Length: 211
Length: 211
Image (cartoon, rainbow over all chains, first blue to last red):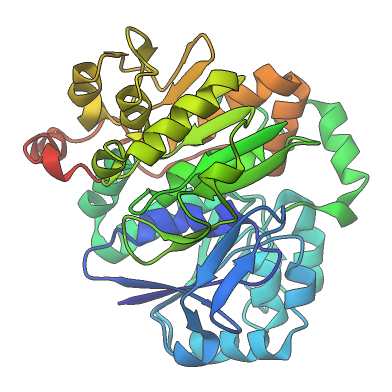
């Protein structure tokens, strides 16, 4: 099984690395970071670069496609090479997945038409405009399409997906070894729970959606 | 404020990127990935490389030191250059922090003598042997030393630390924007909660501790 993680300039690092950390531990799987050209790809903050070990053209038929989000998704989704690769890879994939605004990229490639999907809470209407049916759930399965909400939700998606691929024991093993027993010090992780003034502030500038 | 994330061959990617994603969003902070030499540094799975933008010698006085774990911590902790950098950086840091077995590295550099600290659940006795007082907590503050348990716990640590540095609103903003409202599909993230046969299996081969 080959798992391909798409990188593009301005991706959000945890979107990619959260589910990577879970899925790359699947015994026997080959995980490969891919981008238009092989080499370093810088993130949205500018202070981190991940290395794409392979170019898109070298990974035409991954079993799992994973697309992270980021503010630059809006640029990447108009890139004909990225769109073409997503369509090609999706044609033979077992699972096509996204985290955060990565769903916009899948939708822009025409892969989420009429499908239930999730994305960053600030990007739901953008996702709807691209033909999907956005929901407020954290992880959404619609056939082979699996989408996760903002940034950190990719970890939950990774565990869901690993359970489907390899069974509950395999997924619980990875949860145990990554000690994923979350205890955030605040309960502000969704627009329903966070202080209203913070939510209102960010809704007011959703063009700057950070993730 | 300068935040330095230490990389070394065989680090665990989420150990570094989890707290990076939180702390790098601190307004006005400069976050820099550092290693013995600048350039790509490969992780424990072998399928991911992060780029160290600076060499250790170029970042002698970070305000925050962040040390990820990984199976290769045991090799890194005997590296005189890494130990010397940790001691130098710690001499002027405001916060010295670790995730997972990164605590072994801090302890091996003599920075956790007699201090309460946490690490991956499989590495607690190793941490004790290096002079610290291991606890089973997820995030431990002892003075300016902040340690987190296995892999994913670095995200919780990042939020705790961001709250101390920049206040609750800043930390809750980052929690909201990264949509950190975790909902793992299993409740197997600690040895107390995971199925006993999985815990027993891994206790039996702790030399292969993956974190």
